[in-house]
Amino acid sequence: MPEDILPVYQIQDFNAPSGPEPDFYVKRFEDHLREHSFIQKPHKHDFYILIVVSEGAGTHIIDFRSFEVKAGSVFFLSPGQVHSWQLSEGTRGYVLFFSQAFYLLGHPHKKLNQFPFFNPLLRKPLVLLPEPALQEATGLIRQIENEYQNQEWRKEDIIRNYLDILLIKLGRYYKSNQESDLTQSGSFYNLQQLEELIDQHFKAHEPVSFYAEKLHVSVKHLNELCKQALGKTTSELIQDRLVLEAQRLLIHSGLTITQIAAALGFFDNSYFARFFKKHTRQTPEQFRQSAA
Image (cartoon, rainbow, N blue to C red; front, side, top):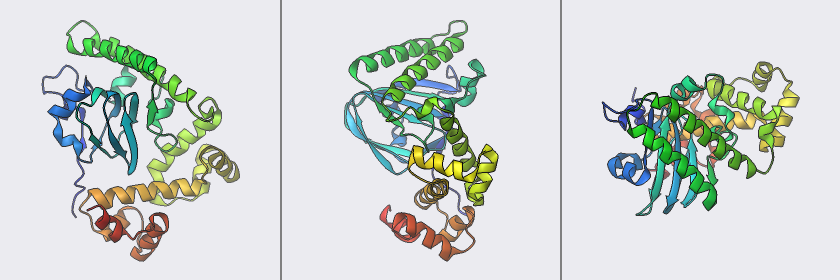
């Protein structure tokens, strides 16, 4: 069977073998782009990413959604998301990579998905900072960069603490610019858990009752929660995840459509084709050809 041809990068692919920290990376964005030109093409990572843009313009494509790049843009990517970009000359800023293990080693009682921007199903992966907030963020990143480049005692502890402060500061601004304060409620916790469950089980085509039972709520309550917060039913969220994975495989793998259908739990090709067309208005073949 043909393999998924979309590259999945690890932090070690960007750090030198003798790099200062195998689970963390920080660099000025312009230097990162110049030294790693291969990342302009669509790819995945197995780690978390922050991209802070201080100058420049362009487009950042994340899971088939296009976002404008401009000064003050901060992008948040979770492991497994597919992205690429087209950027103007002179785009500047910072990029940070870190693994979940790196963060949790210093903060074992926290979860990264507690930050609102690391919930791709629930939130946009972008916030636009005004100049004062951008200066505060880049100031923290410079402190991280200084620690990253030196060999001082317990530098990893300082990096983790600065990183946590940076994430909290960005989270505050992110939440202050949301339409609702969902992140303060128990509803947001349930939606976080739902997102994790869908990501684990969407290929199994489990009914909504399966997810409701896992979350210890009724089907009606879960649907009302999703509808109120996201404007979609639970079934629609599951279907959206299936469509996204189908799109990823159609564009970024050498798998046949029959193989993709089977990989996603569809054992009737015609049903898979109808399902895909219903949600995208294209057949799988048309979608693949349009992106070729």
